[in-house]
Each structure stands twice: as C-alpha cells, then as structure tokens.
Image (cartoon, rainbow, N blue to C red; front, top):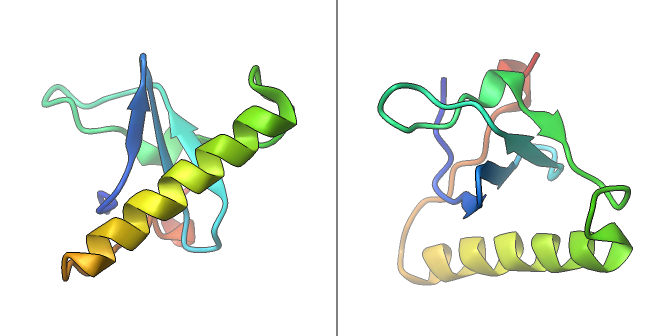
Length: 84
C-alpha cells in the first residue's frame, strides 16, 4: 500500500488526494499509526463542512502538495488501483 507524500489529519480523520484528484478519508490506522487507505471513503461537499468546508479542504491539500513540490519533493498520491 502506498503512503501519500501529503495527507492532513483532522481529529481522527486522515485525508489525501487520489491519483484522480479525489479527496479520500481514512479513519482506520495500522498499529504504527499509518492510515489504511484501502478502506477510505470519498469526500465531497455533502460532508459536515458543506460546500465551503470541502473547498477549504481541497485548497489546503493542494497548497500542501504545492509547498512540498517547492521544497523539491516528489509528491505521491494514493493510487486509485489500491482503493476498494
């Protein structure tokens, strides 16, 4: 299982982009704390934060990836073929 270069943690949720650019959320973790992305759910505007919250989440993930690239990192997203 691929661990993405960038993911956000908000309370118990880990959020990342997939290869297609969708945002997924995992609430399950391995014993070492690594998120289990295979069981992740797709996030969208219907979540608790509504459309504005989803836009903020997208912007935060996009900005974090852009920052990592600016620092010279190769950004890896969760491959779509690894998701259930």
